[in-house]
Image 1: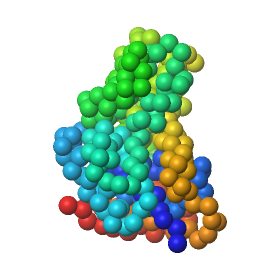
Image 2: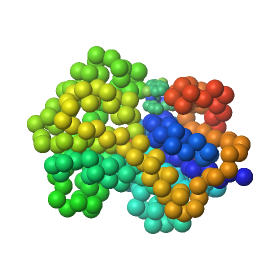
Image 3: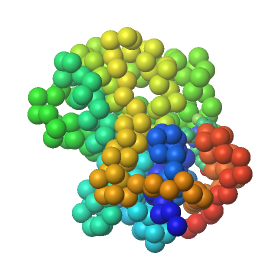
Image 4: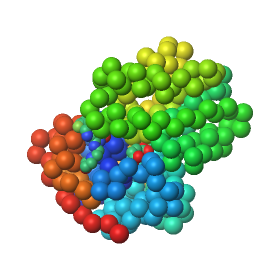
Length: 265
Ligand code: I24
Ligand code: DGL
């Protein structure tokens, strides 16, 4: 029997991380829980996000997962430390991997971070970056309009281009040469963000970096799936099964996807 990797997120955005993991680790089985009934987490109080994140974690631990990936930046910012200190399976968030990749990439030690209000207010990225390199300069910017652009299917439209350009204006006058996408949804806006920031700024997808970290950590704990065997991915949502299935099966290109409804709290 395969033991699954557990993913938790405020909704469906964490599937951007799942897609990278499935690409890098095709023999792994995944369980994903999206708290779509209470999404978004970005504007919520940090203590509330911490409580919700614990509820999701406990659910997947009861399902017997071998590792938990907190695929949501806001939830990572609010709860990673606390959960890691209290559980004895490996717990990975999306903030440390994105930060490490940005530090590897920058040449002038000026890094930008964009995310939800909750993520930016928590200072989780500047703290992680400074913890790894005390000389780094960090410019953070909350972009509360970006998640709604993606969720309204506008992420390729001229409206998206206009809103992204306006929102990122404060970063254009900084010295950053590297920009971290500190939110699950932002990879869908990556082409527009790169276009707005120009060739001199490298854009880092936290989700992609997290997938590499999952691989390294599973290897370290000797938990990597070595057998080619039957895989049974499971998807859980606190909200509408049909909406979840529509978005997830489209994004992951899964034909016969089963989505299970659950209650939390
Ligand atoms: N993308 C996201 N969330 C949504 C959405 C979307 N609706 C359309 N698209 N809705 O996140 C969130 C709110 N819902 C969630 C389900 O319960 C009810 C409330 C980004 C997804 C990243 C994988 C656009 C869309 C899509 C399919 C794939 C990609 C995408 F429909 F951006
Ligand atoms: N998943 C969230 C994040 O990465 C974005 C959506 C939300 O606000 O819940 O911060």
